[in-house]
Amino acid sequence: MANLFSDLTQLLPHLAKIEGKIQALQLIAKNLDSSQVIINVTFKDNTTVVIDQELIPFNLVMELRTLIGDSIDDYQRQQKSLNDLANGNID
Image (tube, rainbow, N blue to C red; front, side, top):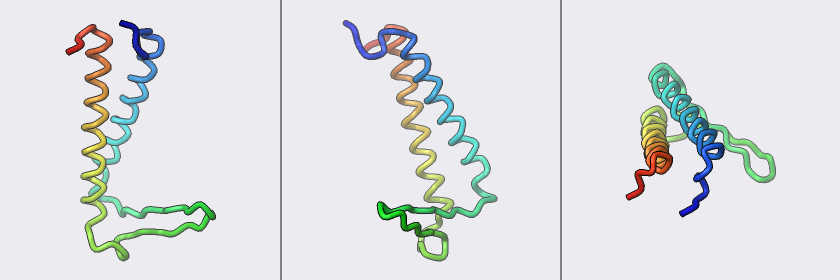
């Protein structure tokens, strides 16, 4: 059965992109404790607002850590699934 990633020339760059995202997120997570989290939001009309710890009653570092951890988990699941597909390990 043919599928989107049956051609390794399509699969390998996608896997490399996922790996790059995982590494970037791991680097951010590693350095998060000594950081100040500030979120810039740009609306459709190009108005920008800043969300910082002063505005939010939750710990932004901890919330971002959770978001990063969940993102890494998701990318690793995608990575495993694609590796299994490439190796013919289809359940």
